[in-house]
Length: 115
Length: 111
Image (cartoon, rainbow over the protein chains, first blue to last red):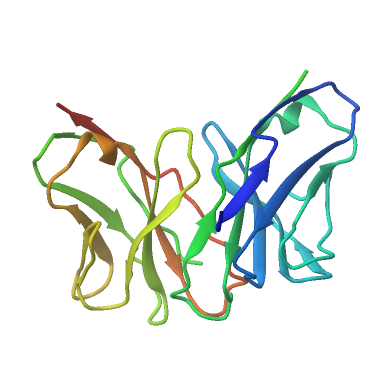
């Protein structure tokens, strides 16, 4: 199906473990984003990517690593999970960030719990 | 990006119009006004956007003040499915493309 998907949808892990959240889009959009959403904070940008092999930090990048070897995939890795990384993670894509009218499309989210 | 201010919550009755306000007094001339909404347990979705003129689409209408310091999202007939958090966001072409989310307005719709 066309669109943007995230996996897993739910994940429980333990402090110190490595976790990778997957994001896949079928539109070949240039830009992709990772946000986290916590109660009382709204969505905050973790990392973004303007194209394959081009990534950059957002507002809250500490503790996260991203890669983008293919246009359609943008995995987010927590190298050593901490309880403060318990959150809902949303992936998003955008055709081109150059235009102020472009619509951003969001995935369904991954709810991550770190025990 | 310029900041927006929205009420924390609003209530509406089903099948009645809803007017969701947003203040953006520091908006620049190149900022577009975007609205997104987030239904429970889902990712945000685009609703509408505008620059200066009022805009209509199948989901909603956007009324923009003449001085552009405020705008109003109008849902003409609220349904239970419209219960969501609505975000008013300013965007210009110089940004890296990400959206800067505030806390939005939580809309409750009563049957």
